[in-house]
Image (tube, rainbow, N blue to C red; front, top):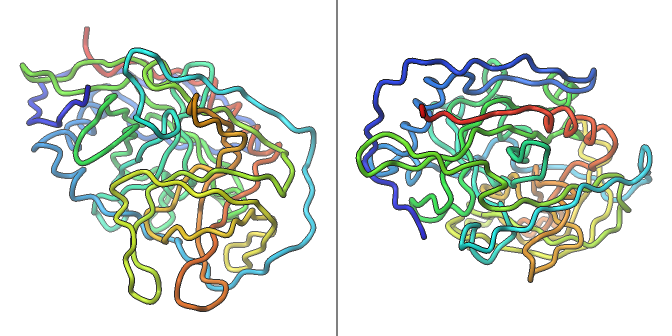
Length: 349
C-alpha cells in the first residue's frame, strides 16, 4: 500500500541520538549527515511536510554529469580476487518497490545551490541492513565547502510524491579518501547508512517502518569482476540531450542492458572507468545501478557499479554512453567500513 505524503506535524523531540564513534580503514573517508534524533526528524520534516512539496519540486542533479572528452579502451585488471555479497530478496507481504529491482529508488538532498535535487540510489545488503549506494558526488558536496550534502534521504520506490515503504534519513556517508581529497572520479561512489524508515502519522509526528532491507530487500555487491561483463542498468534518467530533445522525465524507473568495456576521462582524473553504450539521458542518470546477474523474477542481482557521468562520443548531439567507477578491492574496503555501522530509529518510543 502506498503512503501519500500528507502534512506533517512533528512534535518536539528533545532527546538526542548521538552518533557512535566511526571506525574506518586508511582508504575510507566518512562524513556525518544527520547525527542526532532531533536533526534527523528535522530532515524528515523538510521532505515530508507541506504534502511533500520539496520532494515534488526537486530536480535531477546535474553536477559533473557530462564528460566532454573520453578515451575508449585501454588495459586494466582487477587488484585482487573477485568477491560477492549475496542479495536479500524482497518480502512477500507487499512491501518492496514494485516491479523493478528490490531496494531501488531516489536519494534526495539539498545542493550547494540551496535547491532540492535527486539522484538514483540502491539498497545494498550489509550487517545492519541499513546501507544505500549511490554516486559519490550525490552525497559528498563537490561544489561547496565539502562534507555531506544537506538533508540527505533515500526513498525506495519513490513515485509522484509517495513513499511506499517509508523515508530513510541518512546518518553517515562513506567514500574513498581519493575521491573526497583528490577528486579522483575512479572512486566516485559512496555508501550511506540510514536510520529506520518513517512515514507521517495520521495524528501528527512520525511512525517507524523498520530497517531498510527488512522492508524492501536489497541488491548484493560484486567487485573485481570481468571488465566485459553484461549488466542491467536501472535508474531515473531525465534532462535534455545536447540537441534539446527531452525524451525522459525521471518520473519512472527505467532499464537498459549493455556490455561493459574500459574508458578513461582525463578531466575527471579517471583512468579505469567502466563504460556502456547507453541511451540514458544526462541529468537524473547519476547513481543508476549496474546490476550483474540480475534476475527479474526475484528482482535481485549484484551491484557491480553505478553511473557517474554520460557522454556524446559520436558528436551527434545525443548522449550515447554511460560511465562508472570500477568496483575493486578498494571499493570492498569502503563497503566493509560502512557496513559495520548501526543507525537505529529516530522515533521516540
